Length: 82
Image 1 (cartoon, rainbow, N blue to C red):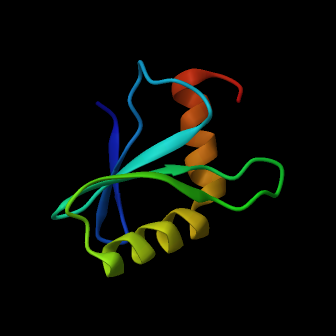
Image 2: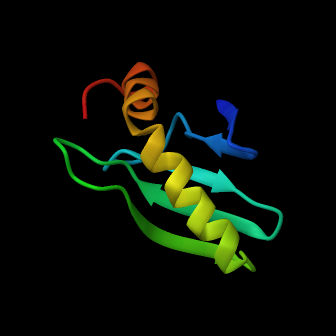
């Protein structure tokens, strides 16, 4: 499973995953599934799994937002066009 460490989080894109483009941000308490922003849209939390602390969820969305373009590029490397 492809993963990267960004901002203290392990971020995963599963090769057999579905659209829309998204990432799984792993935290100490669980994971935050975050939709990537397409065409200037903001990133958004789609689901929180486990006991993720509020502060970790906020940091996760901020981290993904700051890295949205490179994460979209990574998604396209794995899945093709969005």
